[in-house]
Image (spheres, rainbow, N blue to C red):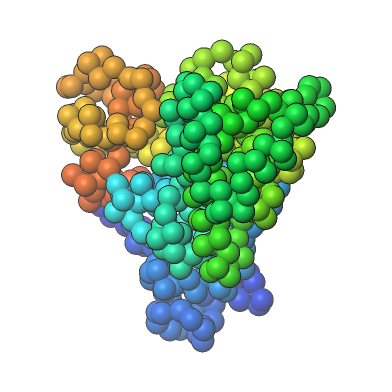
Amino acid sequence: MLSPGPAVVADSVVRHAGVTYWLERDGTTKTLVIDRAATRGFDGEVAGRTFRAPLTSANALALRTALPGLAPVKLGLATSVGFGDRLGLCTPGHVAALRAAGGQIKPVFAQQSIREMGRTGRTPRNVLDDATWGTFQGGWPGVVGADADHLHTTEDIDRCVEAGYSFYTLDPNDHVNPEAEHASPARCEELARALDWAALESSYEQFLSTYSGRTLDLENSAITLDDAALIRAMAKYGAALVQTLRLYRHLVATRRDFEFEVAVDETDYPTKPVEHVVILSELKRLGASPISFAPRFVGGFEKGVEYIGNLAELRDDFEVHAAIARVLGPYKLSLHSGSDKFSTYPLIAAATRGLVHLKTAGTSWAEALRVIARYDPELFRGVVALSIREFATNRQSYRLGCDVSAIPVRPRAAELDDLLTRPDSRQVLHVGYGAALRAYHDRLYECWTAHEDDLTEIIRDHFVKHLAPFAEWA
Ligand SMILES: [Zn+2]
């Protein structure tokens, strides 16, 4: 392909402290250019009156230091959205969507769970660096957060602290006891009594005497805490509380400035209001107050498709959890697996009055596949076939309801883009990222980088639809 020669990426041009920085693109190669011969911290070479630096990890760090807007900070109670780009290519599209949506939404461009990093072969630092370059390229003028998502262990935390994340999502799911959902009262009491109460600086008796009979006034309603519900909540979440506290204290000991979320969205059963009250009240008592909480809401939040369930019930659920978050915090409610749940956004934005964090992750990958379907149909067919073949493995740890047999193994050309819209195939492709990136990594990236403007446009258009309902409240 003939290249027209190096071109300045117009959105990237930024002036700070008397120095101008921009990105230059030559074919698929990008270079950071600085209008100074002498620059501190950057690796590169002097070229006339400028300094030219490759897009390395060291230079991403130098850029985060030079341009304070690129360094992740705490976003506090502002309405916020986590974009989660598994490819490291979608942030310019996310930036464009934020501009188009308007409002004051605060973005978290760098957001990836340890599970996703494992499947995509990336490190916490890779994720942060890619987001830095994308934020710079898109010319985002505001602050950014960085979410170390779904952390289960102290080792996970250490890796992300070292990379410089500002937002930590603590996930104690492995310690939630689903048995308590249906266990007898006697069994629940047995489970609750057996908890590590010393770690919670309390006792079974003290717990009951603190909460028993208390009423939480929620503006339009009230929750009265009775013994049976309290004991069941503790039987289910007590060990998870111990784990959350352990992770939190580990984070505090790193002496970094951070904010954190507690996420129980991947548990087996919807989080009951009384469980929300117990979890957050106990954390508060122990000095661990999160900036956001992700309950598991009622109904089906499957990957990559619309909400499955009764929207009136969901609205009531949002409202009661949002009211609890205002009374006990305030902290934000966090909606995970938020991709493509268009019917739910106005409901949660209104229920929380903008005290909300939305997380999307896989939808950027699924949308990026549209570029492959458009420009390299054979490769796309390969990704489809592989995603079907590996589905049994790929689906592990994800909530999905799709029927693999409904997907054509050899789709016709006219069907390709549609496969990314139809729920069955979209879900199968949605979770196929790990296997697809392992098998076709270079060819996929070649196609995306050769058609970067298409990718940015597709991502922007898709995300504007996610952001608009939140922009109204931000
Ligand atoms: Zn989640």
